[in-house]
Length: 316
Image (cartoon, rainbow, N blue to C red; front, side, top):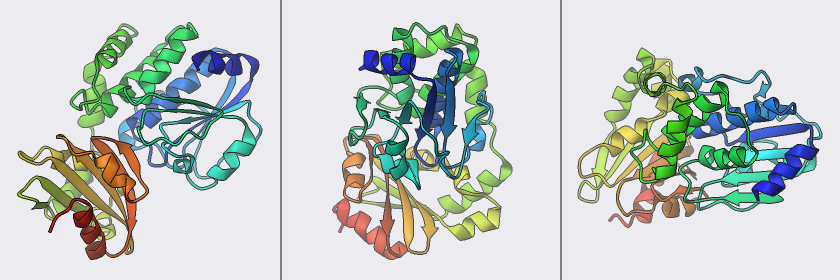
């Protein structure tokens, strides 16, 4: 598979790189690192992310050609879709992508639906960045600092700072190599975890006030509403990490964060630290992800959404 991608890159000139809506650290770091790799090879890469990069990743070396909002329509020698379980996760206009060039699908979600002419799906990888690192090695890319800090940050964040069960030996080995390229782990940790605006904590206080536990305190659920965003002058990007905070409660096996999109649509984020397969639960609602980290959207009022979640978890 890597050889096929190498051949496409060697023959081509123009490439589009994209990832899922609401980009997290892996989506951001992976797209940025691939840009810098293609740029180093004299190619013409362009990144499309529907949503802006969250503030906690603004420290990453950002490529000059990053588009938001509308997909830049053109003809490309290949379209790289990274960290997308389904192509529609790219956002509005995803249907056009296959007409712009051959799609290369690189992902590590068990729920991925192969949609590319090349599909590299490794559910054992800690992150998409780990898979891309393997590609870069086969291409004998000379690693630069700009590539390295994006790779390190992608792995660091997608493993929950090396706390999640997807943390493997390869993740540590790659990150150790990135430190030899000049990446300072303390700097990345500080930028990701210790660089939040005051408003985020005001929002977190309101969210934690909604906390409820179910099923003998093994499931914890909290909610963020549009009114909370207005009161604290925040937005959805400030909620990154909230579900992990709920997951830290002693005895809790599953943490659920409900984020109101509209009064009749909610984004659901789930994390587990036991044997519960939250990807399987999210699959019931058209979502997906990993066994211990997944998401979906559910239509309905907040009461209806909670009832559907309780039914999925078999809570009386």
